[in-house]
Length: 99
Length: 314
Image 1 (spheres, each protein chain N blue to C red):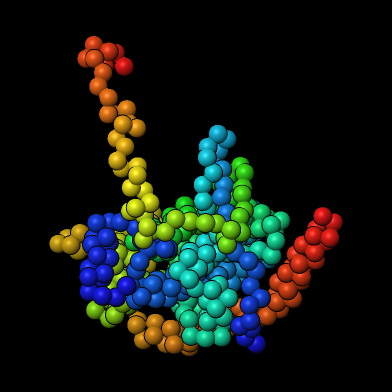
Image 2 (tube, one colour):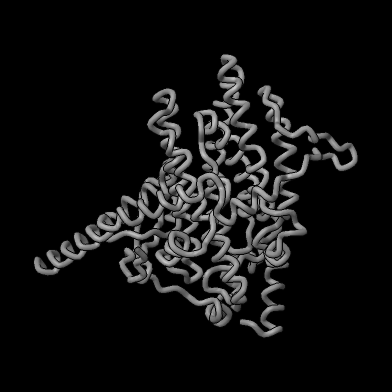
């Protein structure tokens, strides 16, 4: 019995917050029929050892991502603005020592 | 991406130690090799639940039962990390699973051996998971980002698997004469199949050179095997277990332990499907997949109905 029809559950991306106060990070993905099951599966798959204190699940097809091919022009504008970094500015020597 | 120029650029990224991510350009062959290797790895984790699951109901104590349950659940988790990493390459989960249930995809031959006594559970933790750690520690540095990350997660959990096995074996090896005999017998049966887990010798491993050039692997089968034997010789001695190889000798020149000839005929016959448990394993996996179909369908249908109800209410 080979069922090659598409009875596969949808794909979800899993994010968890490792500790209170930390940002969420991507853990991986999983299949689940609905959001509630996705949360339960995410706990059993990615948080068996308290890896997270909170979990987000998002349908994978709802994520819009930048593409590697356009990474150059896409991130270029940031390269031309060194004045956004504190190293761009000089500080009197006397003040520098104290910081 | 298959022009000479593109291949060269790809190789440069690899040589610079960059990680390749799912949407990056990659040679078709790199993608194919990864799908083959990663799905094989995933199938192995799933099949790997069977030999140990066999003993859950007969664990010698409640503590050991809880430990074994947690370990077998981890193996399921490892399979899932790896399947989801493989899917980032554009493979469909269902196709991967069905290619091994009904097609030609392989899994590690080690799981085609039977678990005859509880000592086998000790030895699987110590030797089989010990070998898996050596392999997966290397794969955690793999050039393909999702595969490296999946292996890193696996390694963190695998050390518990090995330690619980080693601890149990040590206990058994210092137990009654019957227990000692059981422990030694299990080691005798698992030692050579474990050495085969690293795959054929480098000279007989057609995929190795390419996988290393592309940074999917960073060490050869033989390098990993030697590293493993060195460590196991020490650990066996510490608990009074004898490794069943009369040719095992420390080599002053290389600084490693030399070992006897691995029975490769047995390896190839198990790979080809004639190991003691090949048929039983595939039968059990097909049974689980087919008998579980209604659960998957019911959950899909339930989700559909919930969605309809929510739409109606709004």
